[in-house]
Image (tube, rainbow, N blue to C red; front, top):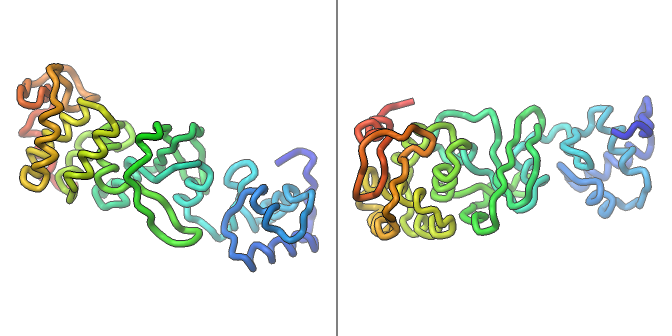
Length: 266
């Protein structure tokens, strides 16, 4: 709030009229620029009005210049509203799709625009900047003000294996991959876009372990991408373990341990 903003002790007529407008048009969240365009009265002190309503508990400030009604609490929709070309992703998407019972304390959003981490209504939000070619594989959920974009199951797993630090831990991902019902065609499309051979080898190896029939065409594609360089199965693990010559992976987590991870309950 600007130091010069005047905060009235009671609701003024202007504040009441603005609240009525927001209610009449069922506006759940807005930027000041958007509200100024929509509001029937072209007023110069719209920021002051919004700040007054915020101070009185009728609005919540989401970030500078962006507000939501105090009764609105869809954090996912608010996070996407303040970040261009974005979607709910990584651990948050894993949980949304029922691929993990572990709930992250942080909401993960991937976006093609750089944006700092923030807190929305008490929830930490982490924005992960991606290239335009990785802004694919989303589905739309919800309606109206609650509509959100979220990565589909295949894209979620590709994202998580690409950036495992935003996905819990290795065991969390193994359970998710083994549990998921996946499309070979989508996996091929997404790993092509990511152009990450180590990622493709890891997913191909896991597909051959857990979905050898359903993902046969993906396995063949991934096998054709295998190069001569060995990659760690768990990218965040130590340089140790057996060498798998078929997939050119160093199993710093053994195959037996990976299978057991998939079988164990939370």
